Amino acid sequence: MSVISDVSFTRFGKRPEGLLDLAAESALPIVRKYGRDIDFIVFSNSYSGEFNDVSGVNNLISTRLSMDDVPSMRVDNTSGSGGSAVMVADSLIRSGNASNVLVIGAEKMTGYPTKKSTRIIASLLHPEERSAGISLPSLAAFMTRSYLKEFDAPRESVARVAVKNHHNGSLNPYAHFQSEVTLEEVMASRVIADPLRIFEFCPVSDGAVSMLMTSDENRDSFGNDHVEILGVGYSSGTSSLSYRDSLTTIGSVRRSSEMAFRRSKLTPNYMDVVELHDMAAVLEIIESEDAGFFKKGHGWEAVMNGETEIGGPRPINTSGGLNSKGHPIGASGVAQAGEIYLQITGKAEKRQIKDAHLGFSLSMAGFGNNATAIVYGGAS
Amino acid sequence: MNINRCRNCGTKFLVARSMCPKCGKEDFEHVPARSGIVLESVELIATPDPYPDRYYLVLLDVDDVKVFCRSQEKLKEGSQADIQDDELGPTCRKA
Image 1 (tube, each protein chain N blue to C red):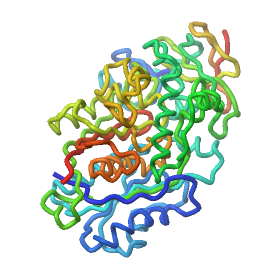
Image 2 (cartoon, chains in turn brown, red; image 1 turned 90 degrees about the vertical axis):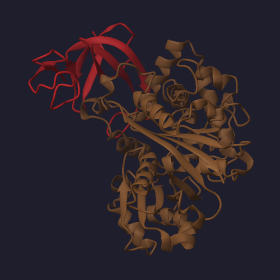
Image 3 (cartoon, rainbow over the protein chains, first blue to last red; image 1 turned 120 degrees about the vertical axis):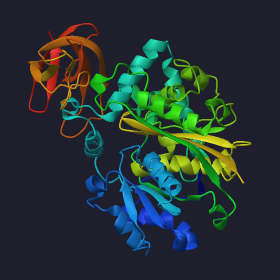
């Protein structure tokens, strides 16, 4: 079994610093304490070439941290890079290939016009589909229309996810957006892809987060606050959107979640705190169903009833989610694990869930092209 | 725009593949997609470079294959649309 023993965030948002500055800012508090013991660096990052004109970032950051000889790799799996990085670190530790792994997730995305960054992100689509002028937000709009129609859900239910996540973000000192929005403000905000509005999408953000992962046997060398990785699940679905049967379910989310729960010998009902990949607000609802927290077609009711709020029976995205915390792509999946760590170790301050012992995160690549689900447990 | 059709089992798909996803054979014919039925359309305001600033994205059913195209006007669900390629990609309009 592997454990997370330390986590360090930068503030997410529009940051003047470069990619390596942000990565180092998040890693240094861990490296200062444990640098000599770290024997592998996993760097989660997807778009350093496109946004920052640099490649081989894993070696650049190891030298920046004066860990020149420590082996490293970059994990690139678009929006799901962070979940994959945690999965790789867990595998390195459990196989014995590494003992103490520094996982860094970082992305520097701001500074370009929106049309340019939208184009960069859309480059993960197949040319036959991309050439129609598709953006990732437009796919969320198709999904929203299909979901509202198929399950007779009120439009307001999707907007309420954004209201909830902005509230949670207002309690998170690392979040990009730290102010609340009202339902009226969400519904009056600018349309991006009809019917979805700007508050219902994640912003373009910069940011980084680092974690120290180690083995169960080594944990006592790294402080007293550990969170165990109880099960990791992963799955792919077709990357051809035109080949998918349904727009209201994501096969990779369903299968990866089932695998993570099976491996952890737990069920969704046991999870105290959940982080989902809400690039668009509708995704939180659909993933909450596909991961098994609600029956298909009923996730919207849970949102309307307040069940997914902090203080509700099934808190989702206590960090503010991608929607409010921001979505520096390579950092996001690592930041989900970081939020669960803070919750289970009782360090989530104003957004702390009472008695959080078990957690779940879902990191998703592309528009459901693949997903990594992780079940976490136990503070000791 | 072309639809790929497996010459062995008849499976149809839009995105290029080296092998048929159903039977694994590697022999395809390319059938031009000229028209389809509108399944859904969304107006996109924040568009990617180098596309225009505002258009409708339309999901069409072309002989049981889903196809995306760009339209300057809103197309009604269930209506027939014609497909034509411009310099950027597939576009469609009311038939």
